Structures are given as C-alpha cells and as structure tokens.
Length: 289
Image 1 (cartoon, helix red, strand yellow):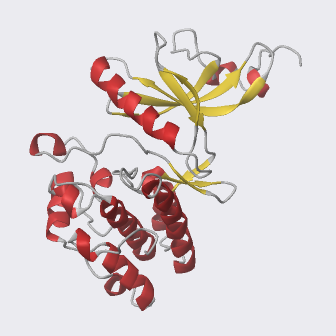
Image 2 (cartoon, helix red, strand yellow):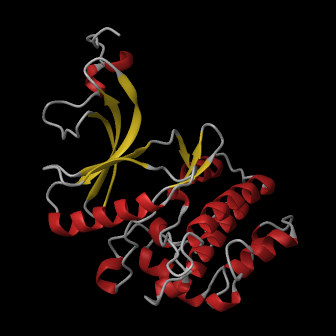
C-alpha cells in the first residue's frame, strides 16, 4: 500500500487528524475528543503504521490540569474491570499502555448512536419508541448485565452508572454497553450540583441515599431506562441534579400507563417491579427480569 497522501489516512483531510501539539498514543492518531469524565479523556482514534490503516478505536487517557494520581487510579480500575469482561456487546480492551509516560488504553470503537441520542431525536419529532423495540433493547441490556452479574457469584461486576448515554445502538443493530469500571456519580451534597441531571436520573434509591450498591441497583437503572423508552420521558424529570435525587429518594414518578394509557400492563408491571424502592422487592436477578 502506498504511503498516505496529503489527504491523510484513508482519504481523511489532515485538518481532521491529530496535530503535532495533540496527545499521541503509540500508533494511534487522534480523530476526535469524545468526552471527559472525572479526569479521564476519551478520544476516537485510528490505528496506523507508517503505511497501513488498521481501524478505529476508543482511547482513554489522563486529562490535562487534573489530579493525575487520582485520575490514574480511576483509569487503572476501569481497565482492570474491562479486562475481565469478554462479551461481544462490551467493547474489549485491545491495547493497555498504562505504564507509558502518557498512560492510555484502547478499546474497540462502536459505530452507532447512544440511546440518549435516539431518545432525544424521537422527542424532537414527538414520537415514542415502539414498545416492542423498547422491550427488545431492554432485553439486550439485561443479557449483558446478567453476564457481568454472574461472572463471579461472590464478586459480581456491577455497572453502577447505567444510563442511556452508556447504551450504544450500533449501526449493525447490536446493543453495546460502555462505562463498566468507571467511578459512579458522587451524590454527596458538596458534589451533587456539579453533575448534569441526566447523569443522576437512573440511580437507585440506595445509591441516592449513599448506601450499599448491589445487582438490584443495576436492575433499577435498567427499569428506569425501560420506563423512558416506553414513556418518552425520564421517570424522575427535573432540570437540576439535587431535585432529581430528591425525587428518587422519595420514589416519586408516574406509573407508565398514566403517561401512555395504551401501554401493555405486562410491560408496566416489569417497570414498576424493577423500580421498586426497596431492593429486596425487585426481581431476584436481572435474569428473572
């Protein structure tokens, strides 16, 4: 294969590729910054050698101007958890270089749209996801969680931060889950106002109360996601994170059929049981749900 032309790798204009002042990660070239979360940045990158293009990946590395020691520990923990998970709907770690001067690790990149983006678009056109599609997506999420929860019965791998942003609907139709191993939202009074209300609206009541987190907490989050897919709006809709958390603590939300009267009673029952305030009254497991 000939060397890259002035148009860049795979015909990509050089204006879209990493400049010399941007961070470099081995043979990965930065294409786009995706997000920053708790001092860890995510990028979409391409893997290249001098003459070949090897595909797209997600790279995670330390953000500048952050507490590097703390962010490095968070990144280590995320990479450790992801290394345990071998499931086709969880993007796998492809390269780990945490000991480099610029530590990073690379994941398979998922081409698609987040469920958050899908639901926003539906709201823009005043539509609701068909219930059979919502049930299928929830079932796919449940299968992934069932795998992580049963990987080690004594120490199940919990997500702890499941929300529509972490559900990626691939252009191939696959439902992928990202965000395993990331640190959950801190809902302490001094930290709560820094969070976007969308990041806290799927926390379980026990998480909102800063109590122990179990597999039932992930189940609650899945129930809240199913609720939003079926009803078109989040169960705990407020514009400020503290107000959202207060509603979660109280268990204050409308029954799904109050919002969508035509909804099947069976789907409503699944939502209500998985979102029961007391964890012991939810389904015994994600598998049962």
